[in-house]
Length: 112
Image 1 (cartoon, rainbow, N blue to C red):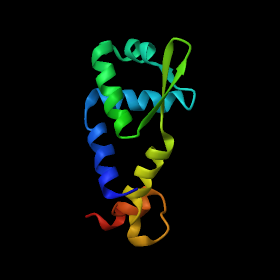
Image 2 (cartoon, rainbow, N blue to C red):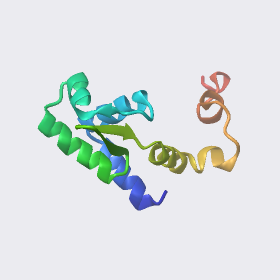
Image 3 (cartoon, one colour):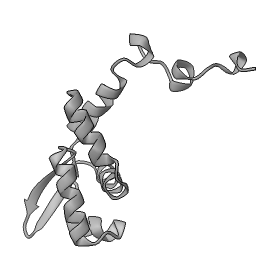
């Protein structure tokens, strides 16, 4: 993932409703959820949800498909994994990562 794409993804997620929508779709898995159900579960007005889904779609965080008269939205796991890979690319100075406690936090014995 390029820096420009990463910035677009982070900007799309930097809003409470969009972050909630994306997290809900991640929980749903690849089968996704109808827009009406998303609005119902998150108590978001349909017009506001439409705007947020458009923003998430432009950042390639969600995909959509038609299922009869419903539009089903799903998290784009490729984009999500690309973001995680970009953010952790140089984790631990290029060494294989160990658990976060050991890798990135000072040890209890070194804290005085």
